Length: 473
Ligand SMILES: *[C@@H]1O[C@H](CO)[C@@H](O)[C@H](O)[C@H]1NC(C)=O
Ligand SMILES: *[C@@H]1O[C@H](CO)[C@@H](O)[C@H](O)[C@H]1NC(C)=O
Image (cartoon, rainbow, N blue to C red; front, side):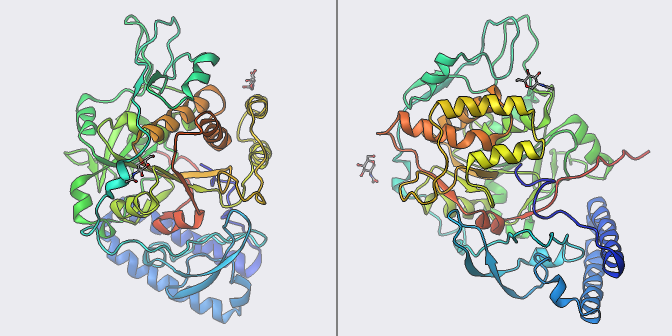
């Protein structure tokens, strides 16, 4: 959620020849995009057109002598290897890395990729070395050697105003941070029998399907806030197509929008690799807060799953999920992996940024921040060699989890903060993590915070849908 309208890739209209040219390019891209969504069968013709446009574009760049001017503003343009500066490490140390621009970037969106503004840093993928094949992958035997305890969840409360997150009081909140066998709030709390559901209602068949999943890739679109981006099928192995559940949660409104655009689930409820699961009776009015349910509570939605990968709808997956699990979890012996923010590392900065962009009610942000400061949240200190995290601000659009007790506990605690305070989960991440560590010094929680450029290497980033597309007549 961190990188939306305010992100670094906003399109800036340029005046004169360049402006007109970019405008023309953008229109071409929009048409292409619409066509691509509508009919996959025309894909070949359109990729030929894309190449043609790209060729014209390159010619124009040369002809107008804009090479220098545009260099540094276009991302993922050339199909060759680029040497780029990745200003991405937590401690501000810039590193120069070779980046192979990914094939899809040059084919699918090579036309009219949005230029970034002049003063912004470029954020590009960095090279990551995935395993060659899923065949040789073996879950390390020591991998199960994580802190053991058992979690149970409060399913029901006798409260006259039932709510999805339940009514956790401050004492219960404090206790829940202790890593031991316990029963805690973690969403999906029902009210007394005479009351209607607290929301996030699923079809029984979908629940049965979800109960069978062992490894899950999931995402959501609520309130038609985005397009459906299918995982790049040719990059997903047959093994994963058979064994991994790809679940896209949508509400009824989004389903209607998708259908009107020609994205209609088949008889098995799939659109491409995505199994579309319709959520009825959304638990919160705020769609972003509702989006935190599948984002943070995959262990509750998929009770038999051992691993899950969360992907924001603005990303298209083009890496095999098993390779992702090997790279981010097994190789680093981690149970929870999330990327750091590409720009901000201190919660203080994040608070300012949230207010500057009016992301949320300022009073509510202040209340949350005050509680956190009075309960020990400190500023991020990049100079401290013992800093417990490489950054206190995550870029939570991509999360890889092993469903271990510590990982599940952390997810519940984080969700409860989002339920209690603002829905801006970047504000509560570090607090939740640091408090969990502080209260359980002898219990390991292996959280791996990786670089944002690694996230960019496994999925392609798009912008969220900007305006709702009017339904077809
Ligand atoms: C498992 O964890 C315990 C304590 O956390 C440690 O002493 C032991 O060496 C670990 N075993 C393996 C195989 O990593
Ligand atoms: C903002 O949040 C405060 C405190 O939570 C609340 O009292 C107030 O009504 C909210 N304002 C709006 C406009 O929602």
